[in-house]
Image 1 (tube, helix red, strand yellow):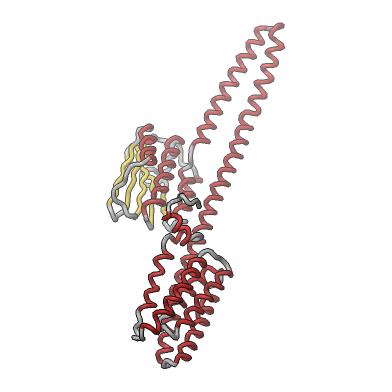
Image 2: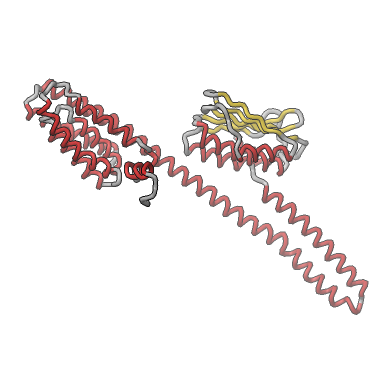
Length: 391
């Protein structure tokens, strides 16, 4: 961090140096410190105010530094904050606020939920003993300790499950990235094998016939001419095969793209349902150029859903209207006005190049519907792998 950097990002980096996904939550959480100043027991100000202010001077550095720690080292900070609460209790009966802060830090110590609850319960017992030592009635001791224990367990459990959810999302994203990497590796290996099988024999044949034509050039020009013509024919056949192979390589599989999209959205808690070969499409196979464009539309639309929609569910359906294939993508997100960017412009251009169109219907609070249409001509049956994945 350079001194010339804006102070706002520097402050945020100091507040949450490790848990950036929490944003400014650690600052907002400090609002609960107001409970320390409620003084509902109507004690004289000179009894509780100064000790409370001094406790804050100790608490705040511990609080922010604890966010920089992980593992068992967090336990030392949580224990110190808890002791601060126990020590302040004789002066301020709302010092149990510190116990709840201490409980929340246990989530980052790597303990199981059972051990966290047991630790909180042990801290509540110590708090109850402090209240008894202060000379408070047992009825008050039981009520205050029970409320403190209930709040600490509830808040800490919520934080625990939220953290576990984030970890699962991170693991799912890593899995998604690994699937993409392995898929790209497998595709490169397949391309290498295909090109070797395709060009190895052909180039060898061209080499042999070229050498033969060179030897026959002086003795039998007519035979040499025939060999050169044969070399030209073989070369043209090889060129046509290479073009067909490149077309297949460039074609992005719609079913594979949808499977990748499901992994991406599930990492953000968005459920994706999809259906290929829907109403009117039957077992018609899409031409590679159409399937590639629709796959790219799916990729861009799903990326927008993941980044901007705030949706909980999304659905993709491929069907057919008279003479055209229709790809419908909808979500239940926030909807509203959509500003066309490079992604949407790219969609429209790709579809327009093949005689298609793009329609977007978005209503605030009701989600977004995107429809991509492309002219459709009769084709062979749809590939079994795509049909199986669509199920």
